[in-house]
Image 1 (cartoon, rainbow, N blue to C red):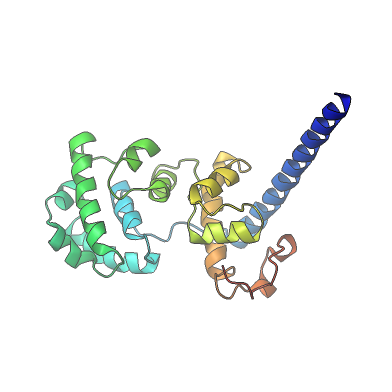
Image 2 (cartoon, rainbow, N blue to C red):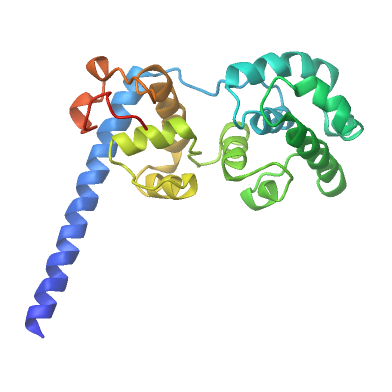
Length: 233
């Protein structure tokens, strides 16, 4: 019995030490990223929470630059739920066909616009549950809207955030929802969206998928990425 108690105590101490070490590492990473990317923010162009929601839906399997090219013309023609709800899927498809999955996105955007008019008076809701109930709005899209438009304490995980988190050994999960939950467990609420933007910036500029620039990485002393640019992720 005493031996079992000693083992349990030892395990608890070990877990506590690991947690403290990870918390300290993440704090150092966030500090370095804040110094390296002080102006990092969303790359999507928008004027209202609704426009942001549309842009975020379009960004699935599409670059932010391409989304901005599309929305630059799109939002000049239509920028309210009522205007989008009145469109036919075929009409909207013509406007957004420069992005991937445009046929599905066209249907989602029109249906989501109609849901906003029907249930929310044309306003974008401010809870994750309500946002995710809208067609075309998943966990990441809801997180982007909550964090950017409504300053929520979330940390949406895209491919860049997940890749950097993997390489820095902050998470081993592949599911973006699990990665976010692991990260926010160590990051204070007010630092979560800034961390989201800075991790994306670092993933785009330095820690790319195919050829990460490990030699000039500001985080190289905290990173054990094994093959330093040879391994693909």
